[in-house]
Each structure stands twice: as structure tokens, then as C-alpha cells.
Length: 315
Image (cartoon, helix red, strand yellow):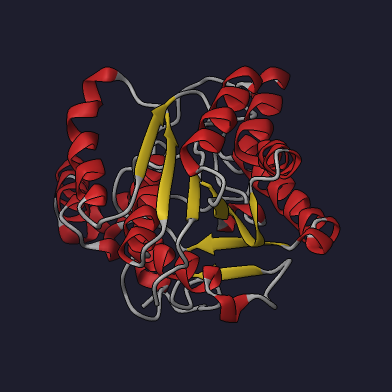
């Protein structure tokens, strides 16, 4: 299906991961794109070819390398968006894909009081090999994709840096409540389409505790709360708001999470399809929920993970 002329997607965090994949999917179906991203000059050589591919889809593509979290820059972007879209253009889809938060521990690491000894030493002794050699072999094979060895491989290392109140507040705003600012300002400027779709992104860390993820976890929960209220209070204005919960996905944001290799291994072992979620998997759902037929889906949290969350299997 091709979207109607004058349909625009505003994607916050549109240069990689879920944002870029969604841009490609929506552009392929005729939606114009306004992409806000924040990247250093050194990585633009990688990003610009992706933007050129988007333009090759025959849609209008506007990119802005700016801080989407700064109120002054937001005002400038909305003024520019108004100009670019013209009198007949409106934002059909708003995707909040900002991944900027603090990944720090909240307490010093210490042994668990009732933990059993790690089996590596016992296994090395039973095999008659040096424990260091066993660990090296496990690390090498684990890095090569043998996920079942995650328990024998070297555990993740965490920097001894701890969350402070400012870290938490900043992360909750960046990855959570900033969604509301964009929705309110877009609506105040009459930039939304009569039937608009707003998407936020959460993760399984919204209810599971991962080391170093406390601030981001709080941000995801805050985003979900905001999205529910947006779904209710903005519905009379034609705005639907839903939250997508992808499975563990290979993205720059995941790579920044301490212990991400072990998270990926666990996800692949749990997932009924035996693989990680991909950005195009999520982009497909952004597209589907942007269609006219999805108008009655509002205020939902939809898992896009191939059944990863509900599977108890580790085989």
C-alpha cells in the first residue's frame, strides 16, 4: 500500500537501528521522511549513503543533525518541518527512537551470599586441563557464536561507575518523557494528520533487572506510562499511540549495554526461532500500524520478538 500524498514520518533517532529501518520501510511505501539524528561528523560518511538510498525511493527526505532533546532545537525543527511539508503535508507517523541514556551500576559488585562455586574449576579438574585454558577456549567459542557456552565464558565486566540522581533524571527524560514534549508541540502547531500514529520503543528491561540498566529501565517504564496517557487524552484529536517492545536486537544501543554478548546469547537460546530480532522486523510493525486498517489499535504494548518473551526454552 502507498500512503496518501502529503504523508510524512517524523523519526527521532533516524540514522541507525529501528529509526533507520523504519525510514526505509515507510519510504518504500511512499511516505515522506523528516529524520532527526545526532551523530558526530566522523560517522556521517557511513550515514549519508543510507540517506541517499532513502531518497532513491522517490520520496522527500529531510535530515537534521540536531539535539532532539533541546527545547530550542525542537522549536527550530518544527518550524522547518512546517515549511518543508507545506500547507498540504501532515505528520502521519511519529517514531520516538532516541537511545541516549546512562548505563551504570547502582551498587558495587559483590558475590551473592548463597551462590554455588562456578563450575569451571571443577570441569577443568575433571577433564585434566588447566582452568585458564578452558576459559580461553570457552571465550573463543562463545565469541564465535556458540551461545551454550555463555555460562563457561568470562562473565561481563562492569565499570565501577554508579548512577547519580542527575543520570537517572536525564535518562528518563531522553528515552522516556521527551515523547510527550514532541507530541504536545506537534499538536499545538497543528502538524499531525487527522489520523496520526505515535510510536515509542521499550524493551524487556521494563520488567527485568539487568546490571547497568536501571536508569534505562526507569525510562522505558516512564515512556510506557506517557504513551498510555497520550493514547487516551489525544484520541479525540485523531492520535493513536502505541509502544513496541522488540526482542534483543543487534543495534548500536545494544552494543553499549554491559554484558550485551550474554544478553544476545540468552535471547537466541530462548527465542522459538533461534535468532535475534532485527530492525526490519520492527520496521514492518511500524508500517503495519501506520496503515488505515490499524486505526483501532491504541494504547497497546506490542511485543515484536518472535515469541522470545513468552518462551521458557533455553535449548
